[in-house]
Image 1 (spheres, helix red, strand yellow):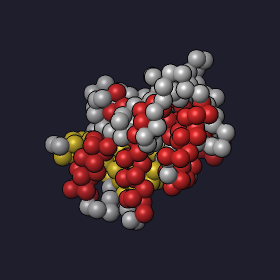
Image 2 (tube, rainbow, N blue to C red):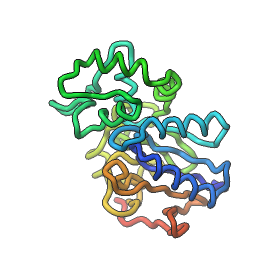
Image 3 (cartoon, rainbow, N blue to C red):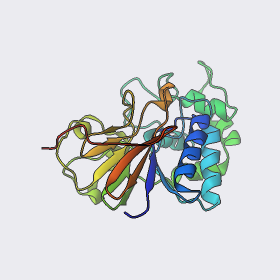
Image 4 (cartoon, helix red, strand yellow):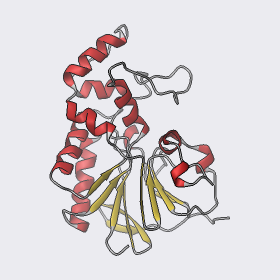
Amino acid sequence: MSEPIYAIGDVHGQLGMLEHTLDLIEKDGGPQARIVFLGDYVDRGAHSKGVVTLLLEGLNRGRNWICLLGNHDRMFSMFMEEYPRHDEQFLVGYHWFDKRIGGIETMSSYGVGVAENDRLYQIHAAAQQRVPYQHVEFLRALRPYHQQGDYLFVHAGIRPGILLEEQTVDDLIWIRGDFLNDKRAHPWIVVHGHTPVDGDVAHYGNRINVDTGAGNGRKLSAVVLENGKSWILDDRGRTELNPSATLV
């Protein structure tokens, strides 16, 4: 990999953080830097609509951007279907408008209020009026993964030991324990988000976790990958990122 590739973790409606991170990347790699966005553009933060608008505008201007699918993006997309659906991967008792998930904030960013006693069809009808068609199409077109050189970019992770073409989208955007606890080498270093880490981006030898909790009001992070090396990119510039775990 001769040219650097950048990856940005879960944005979750944090428009200001995203704009700042993109400024850092442009200073480091120029306006045509290749950026992989690891999904979860919506929910929890106040500006989901603004985040989707920014990404769409960048893609329409020909920016070298790759936008991956996150589980929260699929929740939004499923709700915007002709007959709204809730993701089957939810734990019992959860749904997109649970206060812990973030659908309320996403709808609010589009000017759709969600009150406790509102019926689902009422919210859905209002959303179909307020959410631009281009935003729905953007969500539906998101890729489940991107593979480049020695790296596999994906929202949540992979099912260890399964060929890439046999991975399910559910695992790629939802998996946690079986992937996070596996210390064996994968065919690639997996660059992912989905499960927030405390503090900075973490490199575990077989994977790099770029989700540092922007959705919970912490920070949005980016990494640089170039010539087999990796760095955290922040206001200090590049800080080398070395594996903190030994593979088995």
